[in-house]
Amino acid sequence: CLLRQLLFCLTIDATKMSTLQSISTLVKIDHADVKQAYQNYVLAEGNLDEQKRWSNEFRWGLARHSVAEELVVYPAFEKYLGAEGKQIAHQDRAEHQELKELLKKLETISVSDPSYRVTFDKLVGFLTSHITGEEQNDYPKLENAITPEQSDSLARSYERTKMFVPTRSHPNAPDKPPFETVVGLLTAPIDKLRDLFSKFPVDK
Image (tube, rainbow, N blue to C red; front, side):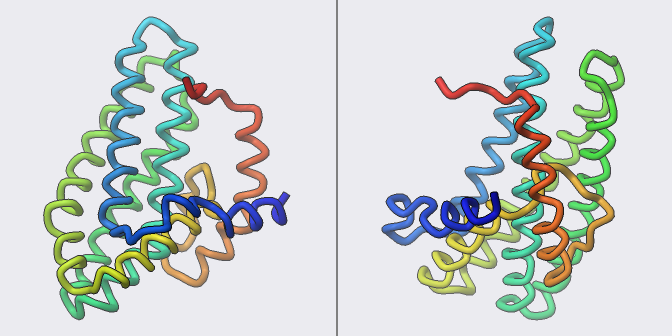
């Protein structure tokens, strides 16, 4: 329920967050996680069940990460980097929209359909280019413009926000606060219920 989500959100990662973290570090971890999920999907070729599991993991992770960036990080680009930050945020939002469209398309195709792999590969190719731009240009500029405490505050907000954003892609949702926050809160419960019936990799 939402109350349980809220209580969990308020206590999430208490130990991990006991020392200062940078927002760029958390984002890079998310980037690595979704790329690893894709690699695991590729390695599971011939095992449809495993491919479904890793595909779900990829889509779940990327959708939450993308919306959390739009809610927390892109406004920070605009706030701390001035005119350049506004341009960076605009470009990143446009790229996210393309990713959302591909992600939503992927959800409509059966993993057993040959076009699934084609669409998945296209998505990951675009994502890789997007990630490179963020990690090599956008985030270094942001970190240079803020204090460690500000970066830690963004990291905390980013982690909390991921608890309340949709676990499936909604390409028609607004991509700027405060509207997406409302849309996310309204759609997330339904998505999470659907995910109870989806397959995800089991922690080992």
